[in-house]
Length: 300
Image 1 (cartoon, one colour):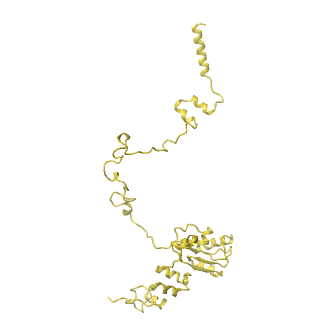
Image 2: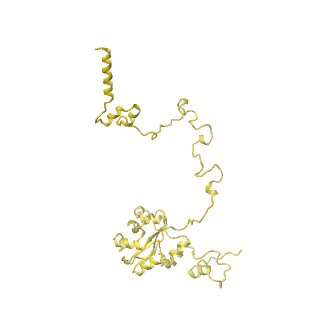
Image 3: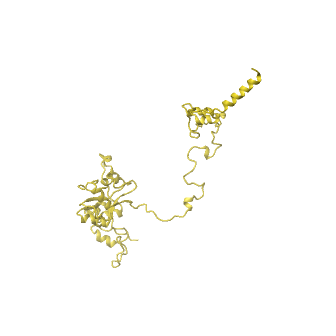
């Protein structure tokens, strides 16, 4: 066979093989026909698994010589606040010494830091829970029973529960004994008209926690706190508010050691014929609690 015939045969063979297409090739074999740059993207195996790019970060070892790139000053520079340990900014919102934005901006409104935040509870919602048998009616309904029945949520930032609203006429309202923090006039009247009883009980943060978790206070000699603020004393000793101290008002006030209805210094230069200025008027104090002598104001 001559050289010309051999070259012709090889040319025909190369042309035939270039037109061949793989048929029913497995996915991992397709990568063999791809370029080397796409091989890693298509091939998946235990030897090719690695964390995603940017998801990991190598540990920065400082103070280990110049050759590491982080020797001598350890990347902190020369002196200054950045070279020292501790907090670099005095507080959040610090602007380098100039008046910060939260002080430059005008302030609007008023927030009473001493206000009691009560969680509202509708009496119609309470009727639904009673009709479904989720709250027992044979014992007093307290804050604990209301919370345990999932009728009220989120008391961690509240100071108690207030019952309000009008009852649902389509649902029964049996005689109930309810001890909560406060009651609206309509809600209290509805419970009393149905043959029940309501009492507004004082709670602070600790007593509210004790009400919800009494097992955590066993053996610690914990006793329920009494109201000490003047406003709380007047609220929970007032029968109009259904306060639980209304029946023992005189004994409770006598145990305080001071008269909450008397404001020192208000009895001087009082005109007995002038109209009553309000519940803090000294004449109202004398009428409400005549058993305790008023403290005289020293002459100037």
